Image (cartoon, rainbow, N blue to C red; front, side):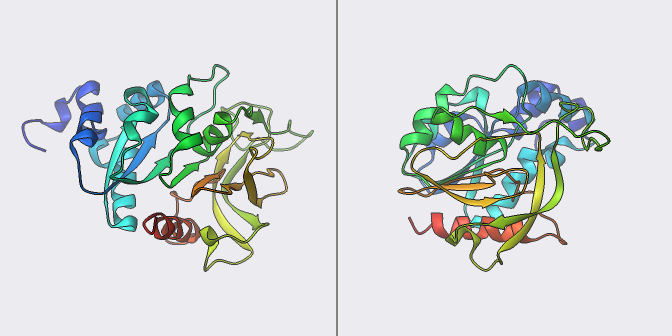
Length: 257
């Protein structure tokens, strides 16, 4: 970066370095992929304060590099507060990936993305809260997971205490074969971090994967290359690589379109 000392960057300057401006996409003609960060703005800003090297360590920055590596295309990263679905629905956008987010008792206004989700022909995949956003676009509510049983440990006691959460690298059962899981077995191990879920799949979608506690772990539009997953395939590591394979499969499918 030229012209800034990172130690003296304000929160606004950091934000502008981490996220792309919408006009950058409008000016692009060559193929790109888009990562839409739907995390709540105050949580993003709070997280930046805790990082020693936010320009490299911030999740949007890491995802930009990870998705660029896996797809072979430049990845632009936008925050939900600065774009609408119409901004992203462009011929040169070859795939859209939607992040997860913390769920609050006061849901943010997601309506600017509903038309994009329901109508775009651009391949799309939503992770965790991003998958839930796809369900919301079709009128589904996001519901809490069950209450903890007596004596049951709370895995995330500071996040919606008293309710069951799926957290960590957990096994997910594939219930319907799909190219998204090509090269993987009937069971995959992927990162989970959620206390909420979709109660069902939207009309026109197939259920692809489940766990004992969360039925809708993966779903797909029957007519378009649009996936929603409750897990976080983007948070793979060297020991748990199934998420990486899911993303590789998604990009292989998306870039054929």
